[in-house]
Length: 584
Image (cartoon, rainbow, N blue to C red; front, side):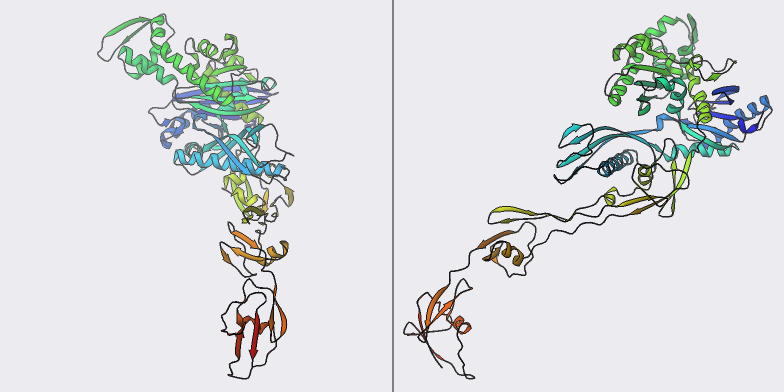
């Protein structure tokens, strides 16, 4: 046996760790050996490692048993991050656009990136963590001017919006798994998500085009993955599962948790046990089922509510996996709530996996789906779990769950999506003689994205070692206007801004109230017997006459001035037809 062909898969569960060694065989996953072991204490909660050393001890024991049974040395392992650790967030992004602008793919991509940033910020705010891997997102709806639309490209309007369902995985979950595996003397060669691993073996590719919900019902949570049109469109989790059923038994019969767990799992028609008072009981299986039915109904309702929330309606079928999917009457309850035929809610086990080759007895129930799926997923996916790319020569590492693209990379480094948008200059809005006027700012220069020096966009795929370069867009010039420019457009007059007369160099500001009045009509006066026409001002004083007539006044000599035969002063106001006498 070639050691390079060996696939070692570990399902590191909250209570049980399952190890599988297998090889690929003509497209099937052939299992050579299986070992499983429970944690001695509660060292994991909801799929996240809390005590690295104790989890590592269990992994070491499983590893050594497998090595001894197969007479091989295991150095690499494939693992999965728990679906229950996923953070799923709905988000909406909106953007105002120019009505004459035709919506482009770049506009749509930038809008989606803004929605992703909003989703990530919401998850960070809710959890308190600051670092997340982006698993993926699905567009729920596009909107144009507030109304739903299938595709925004090529349309025109004043507002566009998008709603997305985004999924993130905390760094802590992955790093905890990596640390436990490393302490066990192993190196991670492949990582996936538990729901993806389960789907890979529970839902055949040829039926993945159908709308199917897979529910992994464990001890602490029920993880949900939904497929449609060949893709996984949503992940979610219900914090209600097998432990709630066990607790209802413990409460009813007054037992400790472990005894209640044995009662729940027993398939005997008559079950014997002792309560905490050491009183012996003998109950039938039907009596136990009657006790737990209210919790089973609650579990079914919660699962169905979550499926409809993210799928928008009942799916075509529901596949149940995980140890707690064996709960009595659970498939029937789910079928009833979703209004599906009972045969469309199916509990999947190892026998239903067509790509599995295995003759042993350790892998048989629905709890075996995920560990088999991890091994099979590693077999069909040879890519690395993380890839490293460079943004402006700085290395960036991203979780390789899906085919990553430029958008995923930029979200990982918290790149500001607004810097990618060709920002238009600020408009100038003011009122002119009571009417609102808007002068448009100039269009900006769009940003440019390059991958390995080739022009790209946000949806361009990236691979190990790619180099991403971003030339930021340049904002357009803000709209501007001077009083002089405005008067030229209005063919002269006198300009007032906010009730004050301004000079011609005044820059009109946003929100200004501008009034343009016609200039005072020109009029004629007589100066020393000659007619002189005054023009260019709203009001004229006697002193203004010296701007219209050529009179040479000797230094320090005060001329004698008369207005209409009376002695005049420099500040007298002139009127049409006035007779002016000036004696030097």
